[in-house]
Image (tube, rainbow, N blue to C red; front, top):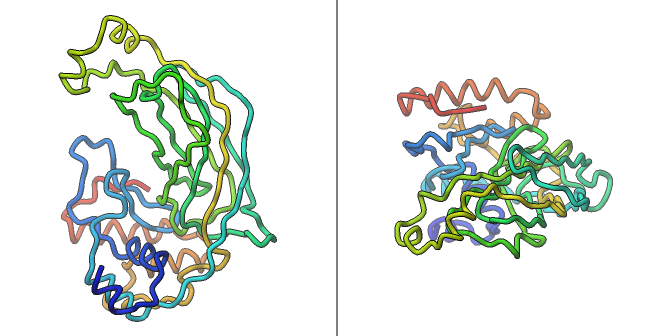
Length: 282
């Protein structure tokens, strides 16, 4: 990172984030439990809920930075909100949707995503059992909140809590966003032994009771650019048509219509480099 900043003192924190996403490598990273597989988002970028976009490649970042052009301005769009109180089912999932034009024709218009925030208010009888997913208009499903065995709060819940995802990076912002809220009612048996031994009879009975709760509010905020961020960037020649920058740029130029074509290229490249591509999911 020091070499990167020394090379170009004009790089901003956003430039560094884009370079990180575009040059990180999947390598041999995998989840042995098979719970968190590698996915490809709507802009052709591989990601994993455990490993993000992969391992940092400082050398590749430096090479890309040599010809890096300044990014378009970043805007912040308050894309919509839901404020109606709704019960969260003990079994099953509460699904909520916001259809947005991403502030089109305003000073805050966002067409290409960077960060996405969901400000959520809810309360449950056991906060640690709450699980939240956010799905983008192009179908990228981000895990915003996973089960936490040691979080036994039953009063505070979440109040306008700012959950964030970068897994829809470089995707289109307009369309229908879906929030899923559910309870994972495991018995917390995988909590540390000391914690289990210290549980009272009341604690044990409470953990065996199905979690209940209510949803109160969801506000969606989209951060990104109005102009395609990679339109003026030059992919490195030695990467050919398999670089993340090349793929994302082409998908933008074709209005997100040819993801499948580049997914095939990624699969072939992973098969060649890694010997297997069993984990990748579109």
